[in-house]
Length: 64
Image 1 (cartoon, rainbow, N blue to C red):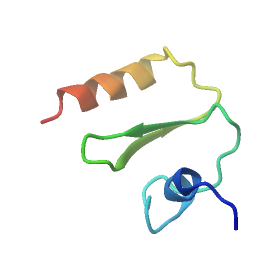
Image 2: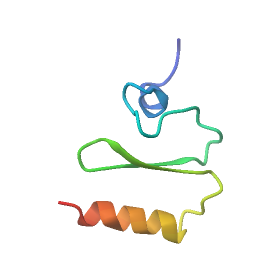
Image 3: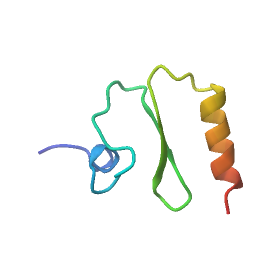
């Protein structure tokens, strides 16, 4: 009760089967694809400019 719809979407196995689970800290990052599905999840320790994250973003932007 009282859970944000976005939090529920990101953490629930039904709506996010690949990357579901509790969010461990408020700097956890989720990458949402053009189709609205979660295509990546990154630890709070992953820097916003980390190669792993920027490559995933670029790959999604280039996806058709």
